[in-house]
Image (tube, rainbow, N blue to C red; front, side):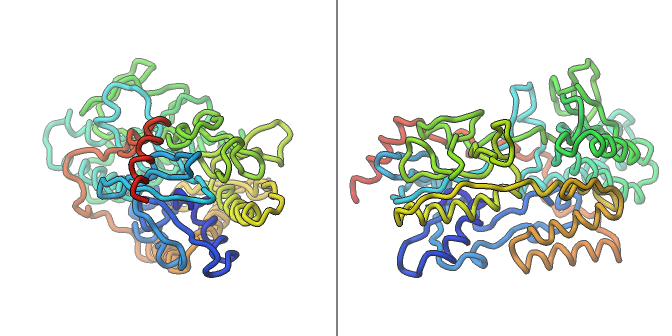
Length: 444
């Protein structure tokens, strides 16, 4: 059984389907959606550059022998080897397992900031990206229809919190969208302002100082005001208060300030490190027989480093962990030795929309068109479905040759999306898992 259909879960399943003889074992997936989301390109969905379907990798197409249970694993009784599942219709059920691969991913990390959950927007799934795009376009339409200078200022200011990949790419992509929209409303052009704030001293620290500074300069040249060492103190419907004391009239706060591992990992009784289940280099969980964990929610030792750090929670690592985890599941069933996960980082890419990109493949630092070429090529290779790759490539070509569209799709109804994942509070405590598992299995 595999929990989660992200990069780690999908690549585990594909490897299992290739290596396990037909009829020798049943392969089960527990996931709320029947697609894998190629999340690195979500900012381009929010800007309208890519269609949502382009990033939804159909599990029914890429998996042929896996039985899918549509729901969320909310608890695991590791002694009885039972997973408690809340299905998408709200009903509870259970599944037994011989080997369990945990790859539930991460959720949006939210802090206890007044008004944040009520008024902020996220950009971590397809629904949020589409709603966010509609909301941003609606603000400019409403500002253009208003004669109140205060309202126009509120609707034309946009604030992104988080200076990581998601924040920088979201700010750049949506700034481009509003720039295109401003051609319709030239009076709004001087009023439109974008802000990127982060409590850290640098943006995109993973790129290193040189490329990070280059990214900072690129964003500022695009007209985005970047403020570091600052966070959000309070959010209301029409203003944002920052920790440096500034109060900005604003009706759009986009929260991309990091993620937190799935709460499921803290319910298993194993050792956790900042929410991630600690496993060995073979991805087996100590003290939890038959349990493996990988991806964003697992602390997997990075054997390419000598400082004892864990593998970073990136798609690059998750994909490769999936193949090793699948092999180790098979080895554990056959009584063979398990293999350790080894991988050396191949580099990082950042698409800042339009012709702007940064890349560091194999340690070489690139900017401009060479970086854009590497970035787009990497994403095309990483998308694990030929139809999705074709859609992404077609969308890019259409935008380059014919330009983009700035019309709303009708998903915005005046309320922000629930950017804090709705299943976040559904996970069961260890004692509750055992009771629920016992209740559900009485009829077995």
